[in-house]
Amino acid sequence: MSQTDTVSRILDAAEVLFAERGFTETSLRTITTTAGVNLAAVNYHFGSKKELIQAVFERFLTPFTGALAAELDRRVAAGEALTVEGLLESLYRVGMGSLAEQGRDPQRFMRLLGLAYTQYQGHLRRFIVSRYGDSYRRFAGLLAQALPGLDPVTFYWRLYFMLGATIFTLSSYDAIEAILREDFGAPSSLPETLERLVPAAAAMLKVNSQ
Image (cartoon, rainbow, N blue to C red; front, side, top):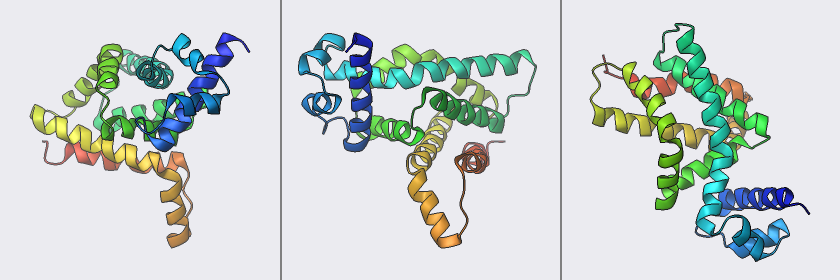
């Protein structure tokens, strides 16, 4: 087994187990057993469980932030008006597209994001801020510009209300969609759900902001 294969197997196993069980509940031994490697391989390639958690997020976030930056650059260069709805549409479309290109499960990534908030991991927050803070500040800054007159504290809370709704909806998509089919006989695809999510999420940011 090559080193690349070993790293991929460890990351794949960690991604699934962290999303299913949580960070604190998942031991390195469980990960290595699932991946079919020995414990020394984790220490060799990652150094620690904290660094393994960071690597799982890095595998998602690096392609996503790169793709989002390219999308924003394109829209700015084209002179497009950056509305709240337009920015959120770009965020969702690029995010889902980036995950699809990697062959990653959107629901699993959203569960991991949710766990990053509910199971506080200080090292993970510091890692994300240091590595992807510029991307976050750029996007949040463009959203704030599209919401003139909204004070920073209110903007902060509304932004996290919106992110919370997004994470819950997409991390639980299969269950929510199954309820929709059972109760209303109306199946809904993920792209259709995202189309509905954009105006709802925008409304959470925009209410009484003018």
